[in-house]
Amino acid sequence: MRQVAADLKSRGDLGFVPTMGALHAGHMALVELAVRENAGVAASIFVNPTQFGDPEDFDKYPNTLDADLTMLEQAGVEAVFLPDVSVIYPPGDETIVETTKLANMLHGEVRPGHFRGVTTVVTRLFNIVQPHRAYFGKKDYQQLAVIRRMVSDLHIPVEIRGVETVRDADGLALSSRNVRLTPEQRRAAAVLNAALTDAEEAIRGGADLDAARRVIRERIGAAPLARLQAIDIVDAATFEPVEGRPNGMVGIMVSALFGDVLLIDQREVTP
Ligand code: PAF
Image (cartoon, rainbow, N blue to C red; front, side, top):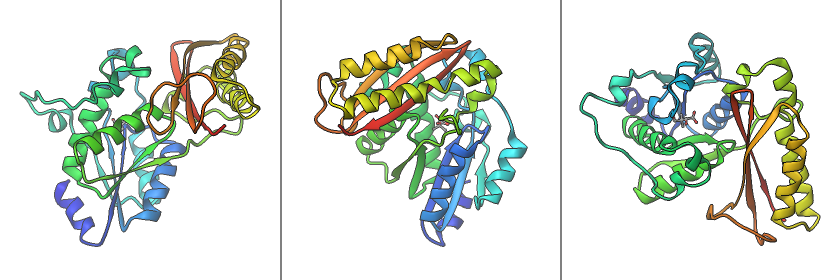
């Protein structure tokens, strides 16, 4: 893979889109931007075991490899890295990469070890592919912040590009997990985006963040199939939790369970 990447880099900048497969239009938005911004683009498909707390969640992760490869090829991706677990985590492996604060707050507190798994695999992938730029979705808002922190702290020479969330017509953020929803849960799941819109309107209308939280709680609480898990509001630049009336852009993150499927969504709001 390193040789393939080096060949691509001989033509100019290399963009890299790391994925866990089960690709949808959200991933393809990352790929499209990567194709526009680079001379060549490589992707990876690797369902990373170290970022799953629950082995069942890992086993249930959808696998649509043939369709994924077709989509990537049609979109202009020239190399797809499909490593075995033993390549990324060789026998005897013991090195981890962790952003000690960011990885263990908010979503990281409810999924211990999750972000450590992400930073560890992304570092290993970056070291193999050595791209100029790498592309991540803003839907995984904390993941993006964690990766930016890691790259900055470790002086990793890769430019991190965050890409806007792609949504279905009813506003539901695209996610590989959406296929696990029943038709009723799928209809109900649009409430996440609706709640974020309510909160955005409230903040723009002068409300403080407590009121914004209340609005989200009420909207999601009124959806019978949704079980709200968390509402986190952070300063978009520092990722520090914020209270009161925000001065600058904030990132609002919500998560809710629909049956046993945990969905997350996010909105950046400037007051
Ligand atoms: O966002 C994902 O799909 C994964 O967390 C990533 C970045 C590919 C690491 O496994």
